[in-house]
Image (cartoon, rainbow, N blue to C red; front, side):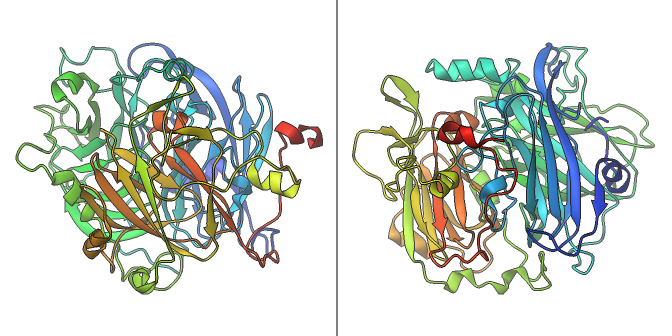
Length: 563
């Protein structure tokens, strides 16, 4: 089934999921949902050139995973690739259970030709997320799909029930596969301009015979006139910020990464690498023709990047012809240089809407909680360490671990990591190390991301959500706190930091485990721009952290324990 279709929640998902109700589970009461993900290579031509992509159950992109608040999810992942694999679920908070987070600090990889079952509960969450492979730059070849957590029936959504969900996955794309791109980075070179932008795994509609060659399949999304759809847009690309828009249609923003927003209309919207948004789109235009869906690169030389623009088609059932005319234009930064940052600041939480529980989202008064510690994380352009190009945070480039950290703790393997990550910028020679942040359980932490790189950097924190309270250009100082939004800042898991600017987030560290703090710019992440927060409850009694699952994988020095 193609991602270019409008997915019917009931027809598609009933095919993929078998749901059984259990009164009690080892990791939480609630319905139990099972699904299989077969991860394999396929040869496709997203941009008209045959290349090897990573498919899920034969689909590129993969099918949605659809669950409801408090469901217990069992995902059996079959690794049919020729290299190790981990699937991660950014934004899904894994309460008490970092064992299924799907990154190297928490899981041993699934070897080729093996399968392994992730087991976790989507505890007290709702919203739009996606899944993807976290190892070896594999995300650049695919392996991603939507992940939806629905409200329970007793919790109303803060808008009329849409006709249906439409999933749109956008991202910059290269015709080289992930192994070739990985080799480019290993050689110290930059990836250069992408070859295109994909929308639901397909290349651009031929809106211009000169810019777009013929014969490329494009995405067509079919809709009924006079309806309202929930359009869930996920940026699954490598690093390029994309402006998303639908010709002649408004985008009513209603949710992002697990929080309902103040409902605001936009004609176009900047979406940064790793981010997810929900818009309501009403099919209220006449059907004289189809309409363009566009995802175009931002903050680049548009004359060089013009061929990269991604174009799809919104097709009314009673449409009388193909999309015509020029593409709807992107924002004009010449006359409004602060357009993007002001748009980002306009995304605020709907404090009166209920989230996963029947209480207003704004009932947690984050603005009046005392800050217990401040981390200032400095990001600079790549540097050379030991003759190799590396990316750093506060002068530390992360070295991949050979065994997950909690397993190392359980088996008393010393020297696996250090708890010496500098939480303030340091004036020392950059180093390559496995250095973690020693976080305090139930602390309330201010994290300042200072971007001294030349491009937009995007950051994600596993296992927690955070309030984006401040964002500006220049150098952050303590005086910057005077501009913080202390009432209705959006809570999410991925945020952008503009070049030469800063973003401040507030985090209630209430989830025990080892949690990955990383760049969502895939090249920077691959080159070491990440760390982990170690969160341990000194009074642990089994209530705040689960033990290792019965099917735990072993690797590195613990490989001999694998059954």
